[in-house]
Structures are given as structure tokens and as C-alpha cells.
Length: 115
Image (cartoon, rainbow, N blue to C red):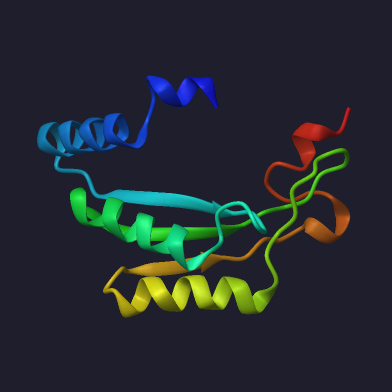
């Protein structure tokens, strides 16, 4: 994405470290898993590297909630488990945030698409 040329991971790491230095507030990373986009072990390795560069206390892995007209899907349970197991094995404090309300299109991100 073109915006990533100026708003890249290095800039994010720098900003999060600056924020922590100024506030001493805990930092939680939110990571939405998309099937075949960012759910591989290589993606998990990259996330571990980012996690190690900032004073992060938790990574929330978030289930993607499908919306009408979007090409994205959520990974199956096995892929999500492999991803989070890899993080945990590498001493990343990780939690999977399960969605509620997706059965009625009322989960996070779904209501904004209704009009």
C-alpha cells in the first residue's frame, strides 16, 4: 500500500517507543488475522520481531469478521492455533479475541458496513 512508504513498521515502532517513554502506559498490539494474507508462520516470525522492539505486554490476535463485498476471510481454527502457538512458543504474551455477534452481522466492523 502506498501509505506504507511513510507509515511503515519502523515508524510505528519508533512512535510506540516514544509513546511509552513519555507515558509509561502499557502497549497492546492488535493483530487481525486474514486467511492467506498475514496468517503464516513467516508472518508470526515478523510479529515476534516487532514485539521484541517495543515494551509490549500483550498481542491480541483478532478474528476477522467477514463483511459483504470484501474479499477477505478469516483463517480456519487450525491456522489460527498454529499462529498463536508459534507466538507463545517464542515468549509472546498472546490472546485470541473471539468475536461476538457475527452471526447477526453485529460484530466489530460489520455494523459500519450496513447502511
